Length: 364
Ligand SMILES: CCCCCCCCCCC/C=C/C(=O)SCCNC(=O)CCNC(=O)[C@H](O)C(C)(C)COP(=O)(O)OP(=O)(O)OC[C@H]1O[C@@H](n2cnc3c(N)ncnc32)[C@H](O)[C@@H]1OP(=O)(O)O
Image (tube, rainbow, N blue to C red; front, side, top):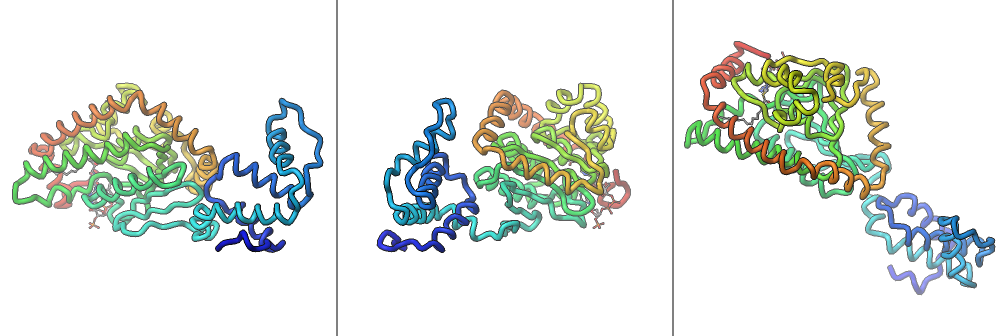
């Protein structure tokens, strides 16, 4: 709508003031100063305040902006305010599609629920009947969700699980879908998939937070070493029974775990399959903080919403400064772990463990 030929009414002006509060994206200091100056001019007339001192930087910038409007009539200032707010409409449109407090839910996922709200993209593993075991489709969907989250306007990204488990790790039925090229081809393709999958976590550009709602097994545990913070319910446990499964560590855990928790503690977990309680995992540095299950969701989401209000650029740049020292090393470790696993998947030890689980002869 061309508003320049119109006179903005007091109602238009009030609507615009409300719209400013709903802006999804910070319009920047320059625009905010203009809005401030036009608002003051429209409501009080020409600048009538004493000039602030040079060191009172914020009030001086506001005063300068207001004073620069000279003797602009109140009506014109009101109109300019309404026009300026209307020119910010792209960010308004995106916010007005969403009722305050309502999730923007992404469609097109079979194994996940992905929502975006309050600066947080939440990726929820959603195969609760299978304890959120990660099947091939889910590996692909997690990668797709992470790639989308890296480009959306969220500040942080959260992974969590639906139901009583965070995740029971790799879906062992992934071993049964053998292509015409045989098990060697399957192992080769799986190593490529795993490398790409873990690579998405290494390269993720925003803070990645795990909200571990219940037990975690296998790859859902090892990946935690690549997260920026891990919050756990006191119901959660952490279990990496790789030797029992004839397999070897992945998710860069052969590098991150000894660094996080000491080589001997990492050995207990990654080689001997010691299952940790949430409290033990916290004492060893894998978990950032543990909460009673009864207050877990409330306490964690209150905290995350506060994090998500931090200045987005500072948050993103700080993550990059921290991750960049390690990125190359992590990619090398990831490649090596996938190579070793490719061989393990063809071993009798691994085949027997998977057959035992699938024929209901064994669980962890
Ligand atoms: C040829 C090469 C192919 C390679 C393909 C690999 C691709 C990348 C691999 C990356 C490396 C990752 C490694 C890991 O993550 S290792 C860890 C693997 N996870 C497990 O070993 C856990 C197995 N599950 C269990 O031991 C138990 O289910 C569990 C202790 C988790 C829960 O026990 P509970 O008694 O409470 O519940 P149920 O067993 O009755 O489970 C309910 C149903 O869910 C199914 N389920 C659970 N977990 C898995 C799983 N990981 N894989 C497949 N299915 C799983 C379980 O069978 C039940 O199903 P039904 O109700 O249909 O019986």
